[in-house]
Image (cartoon, rainbow, N blue to C red; front, side, top):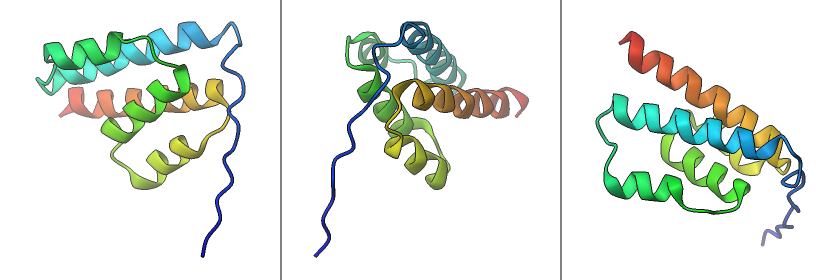
Length: 100
């Protein structure tokens, strides 16, 4: 039997988090347009007011293709650091999509 302990998330109250959330949303939208999957439902999901950590987990689960990177993002307890890492992953993915 395995026991798991929930790690409290930290850093969501930092003033740097809201701009990072918007940057992640913007980059995510660019990816969705690049792969022609920018549906009204996806736009609505990106526009929902959810906690930054929840948004990070949802986007990482849906868009980060490398399992190790995705898992690291899902396990990150520092919200700001998670958003920064997610933005880096999304930027790399967007560049790959644009470069072909």
